[in-house]
Amino acid sequence: MTSSLTPTLDKPGIVRRFFALPPVWLVLGAAAIAIFYGVITGIGSEMSIPFQVGAALIGTAGSIGLYLLTMRVLARRRTPELRWADGREFLLGGALGAFFIIASVLIVAALGGYTVQWHPVDVFTTVMLAVAVHIGTAVIEELVFRGLALQVFEKYVGPWIAIAITALLFGGAHMLNPGASLWSGFAITVEAGVLIGAAFVWRRNLWFAIGLHFVWNTVESLFGIPVSGHRSPGLFETTVHGDAWLTGGDFGIEASVISVGLSLVLSALMILAARRRVAAR
Image (cartoon, rainbow, N blue to C red; front, side, top):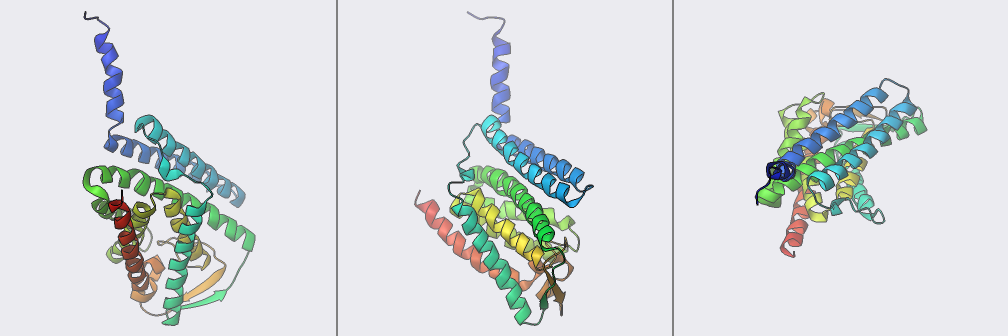
């Protein structure tokens, strides 16, 4: 028996299936996270430093909530990639990020590209602002590029092409940064795009990727080096000498061939580890 209510009852099913499509929840989730974080931190930027820190932390927490909402309500899936456990993944990722940036700075300095001197102004404020800003940046970018985009593309083309696609998107997004060039875009595509993409596929944990990204940016900032073209107060004063190919120029050490070379080595190691993990499933 057919009821006049049948078309109405069919509509929720169609709507639910539409919003459950990976490209749809990718776009909606990424837009919600980016807009929310941008609005909150934009308001905070007009206030004093304590409010800037607070806005960054509120924006970060709210963005995680929006990610969870997107995955559970629209994508209709659990989020094991955000499993915190004892924080070990975050600490392991942070250790890798610290190694990457400190090793890069030391090599460039040894080759005569940097002179690094301890030059703090207000240690507590400088550290707190750097931590708040960079944890926000790391969380937002990893939720969007690895949590949403990489996992969507992975459904259609597998993990390796998904890493390549999201790396290109990540590099392209940074082409609007101060001091950006075709070279810096390529460099950030390789370093952050491929490196962190491989890190996520290997560990299947966003906190590992977030820890890597966060500590990398924070340590770089505290060295007094521009982070992807954005300069902020640091605990050290790093004076640049020589050619931009070595130092990264105005974009920062991420545009140095030293950082690119080191990231290729680390990426290769993590891709090998990730391949073994994927093959073992």
